[in-house]
Structure formats: structure tokens, C-alpha cells
Image 1 (cartoon, rainbow over the protein chains, first blue to last red):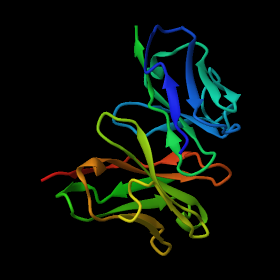
Image 2 (image 1 turned 90 degrees about the vertical axis):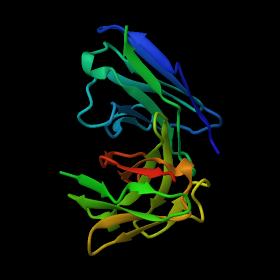
Image 3 (image 1 turned 180 degrees about the horizontal axis):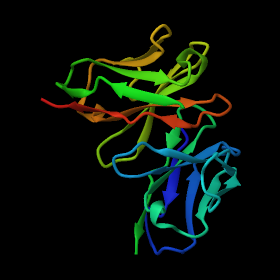
Length: 107
Length: 118
């Protein structure tokens, strides 16, 4: 199985900050990676697919990059609505697996 | 607008069975790749099972042989039959659609909670 490791697990930041979250795969997954945002008590929301493709309706301050085994999600200017937990997920093969999550909290 | 609505969750004793449903509107379940993803309390996301439009099914090792994914085309509904339930199956269960171009999830239901406890 492919293991997905996110870092950091928690991130404290202020409105307007540039935020970067890293996701590493235990083996090569090309660009088969998605990013989700989840708020407490809600279902996850797709942000990015194929490592860098922005889902329709998602603000352009979100961007994704990387390929192979190392990936990043960047929020260019953190907004109040962005305080949430973020997950990466590979879809290179079954079983599909998620990273452990990165909680972005208010500094 | 695509809407997925899960139901069927609840409190069940270890070893018991439960069937979750996911009623879809705005999409045709049989034409899509449908999935179940769960989240244990305070934990991360875990993929559980997928059913392809052609009928192929896939399961996480943790549920293989105990859970069965299926669909009823006439009701446009996805199911997850869960047998031999364990405490570690306690979670919110989400149904989610993937478009098949890649197995990421673009639409999610609101989730239904399952608690396995005596």
C-alpha cells in the first residue's frame, strides 16, 4: 500500500499569510494526487486534482504542485474561511489512501 | 445540482450488521464511480470501497469479506452492507462520487454516523 505523509500536522498562521503544506508518497504516484479541505462536522471538499488542477469554483489563492513522491498545497494569502483541516489523497492504485491531515489554525 | 444523502447509520453491537444507503439526485448512480469513505472520531479519512459503473468492486483490506458495496439502479441508490461489525468500524461514513478519469472525489454526502459498541 502507498503511504501518504503530510507535514506539518498543525500549522498556526495569520490572515494574509502564505501557507504551504507538504505531502509525501511512499512510492512514485506520478501526478495522481488530490487535495481536500474539511471543516468541523462537514464533508471534505475537493480543492485540487491531478496535483495541480484547480477544481471549479475553488478560489485561485489555492494552488498545488509536485509530481512523483513530493507534493505541496499552497494558499497564497490565507483568508478567515481557510481555517480548516487539509488532506492529500493519492489515486495511483488501490487501495486509495489519504494523508493524516494538516490542521490550519489561527495564530 | 448533485446531491448525495446518506442514511442508515446508528448504534449497533459488535458482531452486528447494518446497511447504509446513499440516495443520489442530479446524477445516475449506475453511470458513475461511487465510493464509501469513513472517518473515525477525531481521525483522518479512510477509503472503504468503490463500485465502478461497469460493476467492478474494490475494498479496503480492513473491511474485505465483511462489507459489500452495491447499488439499486431503479432507486438510484448506493448501499454499503456491513456485517461482523467491530468497534474499529465506528466512524462517520460518507458516500462520494468520482468521475472515473481519476479516483478522487468531487461530490460528497453529508455523512451518516455508525457507532459499534455494547
